[in-house]
Length: 114
Length: 112
Image 1 (cartoon, chains in turn yellow, brown):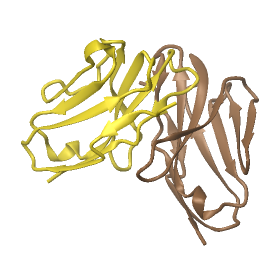
Image 2 (tube, rainbow over the protein chains, first blue to last red):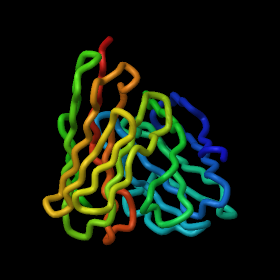
Image 3 (cartoon, one colour):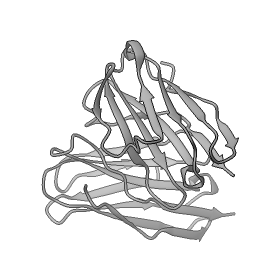
């Protein structure tokens, strides 16, 4: 089966600019996650979707980050405006169940804010 | 928020050396423990999922053990090869959170 697709792979922007990331999960996977991995830290969950509804966005900085999953398939994560500390790898993952037995990850988008 | 600790943070070894890493996590509300290998510019790849106290899993030269009562897991690599160079992440799945909480990872570099 095709894996989780993410784009772009790399992005460099200036602070205060906007950026958007796209994720296409494995077909049929109802649950989709966005993680942020800052250098030297473990991946941190930003938002979890179940179909097109938000299950957990408690760690999403809502003043600048937004995410949507229209039609319960693809998802986009947006940052507006970006700050230097947003430089990180943004990982998308999906699972067909609660995720107890594992997630399937995309290869991530590496964002550099200068 | 679960506190998941991994040690060491980084490790440099020579080809052929054996190595091991530690993952410690709160033992309450435990459901499963995941290990992932994450190579640069690639997707994190699932290595093991363990659920039972005393579980041991093996995949080639890599093996893992689990102690759910004291809240730790060890990952062993026998005879490290350069292709083993990656970040190794552990992530417990807790019944209270219904999601994976990742540790900070161990960065392994194997020199030929």
